Every structure is written in C-alpha cells, then in structure tokens.
Length: 206
Ligand code: PRP
Ligand code: URA
Image 1: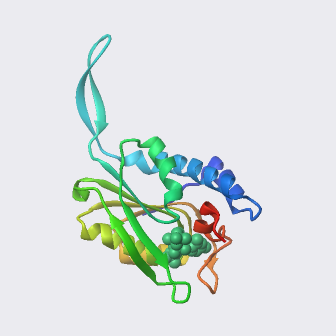
Image 2: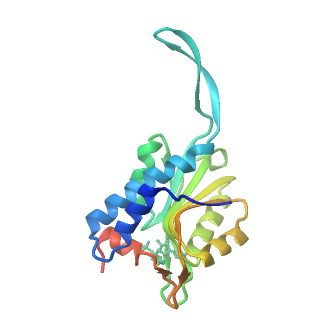
C-alpha cells in the first residue's frame, strides 16, 4: 500500500522546506510539524482494545492502544521526524538504525543499530525524510524484520518512483506513507525536485 498524504497544510509546509533559501531552523521546524500531521494519518488504523474505566459520572468502556508503537529513525536524517511523531504518540519507544549511503555506489552501509525489546509485538514505524533509490529503507526494514518485527510502516517525506518500486518489490507487506511522490532521481541519486540533502539541511552540515 502506498499512501501520499495530500493535505494542504502538509503541501504548504513541504514547499517551505523545498525552497533552497530556507535555513536550518525553519527546515527542521517544518519537518517536525509535517511529521506530526503525517503521524495522525499513519496512526489511523492502529488497533484498540476495550478497557473498563470510571469517569466522574460512573463506569464506562474506554479504548486504549492495543499494541506498543516503536519509531525507528534511520540516522541521521530520520531524527528530524522523531519529535513530531512523538508529540502524537508520546508513549512510543524508539530504536535507531545508522545507515549512510556511499556517494559513489549509492549502496547503504550500516554503522549503528539499537532497538527496544519485543519488536514482534509492536507496530514499527521506520522513518526517514527521503526515499530515493530505496536502498536505505529496504535495508532498515530487513534489519527490523530480522529482529522479529511483523507490522511495519515506512514513513518518508519525499519519495521517488524508483524508490517506491524497489521498496514494494523488496517488502510488499510494508505500508508506505509519503508527503509527496516526486518526479525522478537524477544521475547522482538525488530526488528531483526533492529538497536537496535532508541530513545536511537538518543539521547544518555543508
Ligand atoms: C539519505 C536519506 C536516506 C537515504 C535515501 O541519507 O536520509 O537515509 O539517503 O537514499 P536511498 O533511498 O537511495 O538509500 P544519507 O545516506 O545521505 O545519510 P544522512 O542521513 O546521514 O545524511
Ligand atoms: N538523500 C537525500 O538527502 N536527498 C535526496 O534527494 C536523496 C537522498
């Protein structure tokens, strides 16, 4: 399943992020605001279970999340989505995967992995602003599956058709959520029109 979240507020904020003159502070703030808006839609199908509670007026059946949520940002740029999603799901646990893309081969390389326990019971959201060739997200999802994750959602800001196709082939069971599906990848593997290098724009490097 691919869902492109075409909400006017998401599109407006994403346009601010795409502008080359937008600085680090505004880039990061808009990214977190979009992440929170996206999380609202991504969480729409989370399972609930009934729970007996007492209101000041008497007993009632309420509902609570039936499964834990684990957010897994792909370092570095995935960290840019973390605070926004946690604003909506403050009880979510967080795992980390460190991957960087070799600039020549575009192949992802792992340098860090740390996860909470019981990934097999959780709804796991793998998050990264950019889905370019798809290599990083595909490897990240292979890593969480190897640790037992079964219900996985991939949340990215901007995707290229090439990356979506590769992801759907590698992990057809994973739902993909994007704020925008862009036109294509250029010859050096950047998304066009995209927003440039997300990690550099979030952290002010380069
Ligand atoms: C960027 C981005 C994704 C990856 C996408 O990370 O944040 O993780 O590239 O490209 P792909 O779909 O072709 O794998 P990068 O490797 O530049 O590392 P960074 O987050 O540390 O900047
Ligand atoms: N990584 C980025 O940060 N931007 C792109 O356009 C592609 C990969």
